[in-house]
Length: 254
Image 1: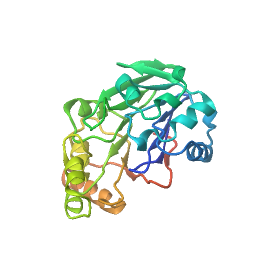
Image 2: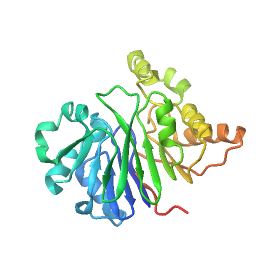
Image 3: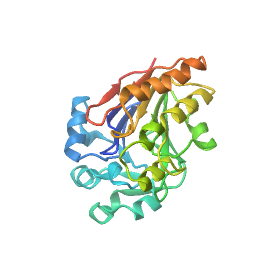
């Protein structure tokens, strides 16, 4: 299994997952050119992708979708509500869209969407399982019991650690935006990510801390906050912090 977080943050998100020979892109929130170059740097031809999984319709998750679909005519899997609320819907070839309701199989890989709490039409996270399991849960205001169940047992977990509440509250954002981020349909704080990891019954070999806010977080603060809570609870995990501008990759899981 290979997991490469090509970009993660409010300016754009794209995650590549290869499982048992099946190649998937989760979100296309950066330009198609950046996706193509990012995949090439990982030794992957974008034309070889088996599909794109979209979590929700916000621009930082679909910005490159139109061009990517026109270049490669890739199947796009997401909820119908997400499709209907995409600003780029009319520009994407209609036959590229494959609405999903529950779990489905793609080349022998099981893809399990699960509901997340975010201010979008019908947002989801994804659990991808074959010989290993990889789960992505970002853009969520809090960790529901169904999200906790979906992340449990993942070999690799991509989990949001968006902000530090004190940095956010004391920052320059208008209160309306602060309230949105802090709400149950906003984004996950560093400490909330840590406690979700503590609650896991079967913990992952690797954790990517993802979707860090450039204004209300810092990579070292996210890592230190999560690591401190894990240490105090006697939990040992291998943490990797993602980046908005550089790919962070894991090429195998033992």
